[in-house]
Image (cartoon, rainbow, N blue to C red; front, side, top):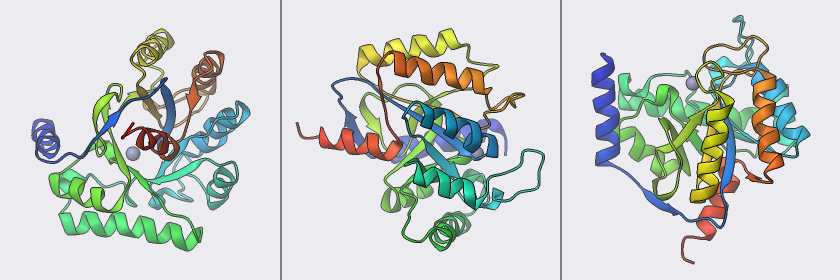
Length: 249
Ligand SMILES: [Zn+2]
């Protein structure tokens, strides 16, 4: 499928179906999210957040668990450790499939398998929030997610403020080779000014990061800046608790 057709599908998914909430906060909130998740995000990203007393959200594709690729995927131990430290485990489809290129029934089966496998591995837990692999969306999947998940994060750049589509949350990349720290800090200024919800996302947090990740030093610079500015850093789920509590105020 061409990039253009994928773009049209995503646009259509968002024009034709949306569930809006109003993000109206007293002060901005920051959330750190990781997609897939490479083991370095668990080891370095998690450890850095924990050291600063913050928690993040990990959108897992369980087919990557115990993977043998160079990237070294996460283990059950990583998941357990994250839960003990109060981080959030969330869902990113089991097979990391492109939902815009998959039949709806197959998409649902894959999403359900991810959920069921997690409940087998970690009884009593549920992935409540979702992120779209490649940001790919269809109207039908989006609607399905709205019935089974609390939120879904896309890959569209921006801050979440005012009228916000809960099933296509906006995000800001922590991709070291594309987003200089000055630009990240500028977006933090903007989020503070607008009292927005700023959701960061990345993949690996490694000394030699991929083009979709960052180094531990870069990641820590962002986390330390949140601490220095005394910002509220919450998981997706906790941020939604806060946003929902202010819906009717
Ligand atoms: Zn992904």
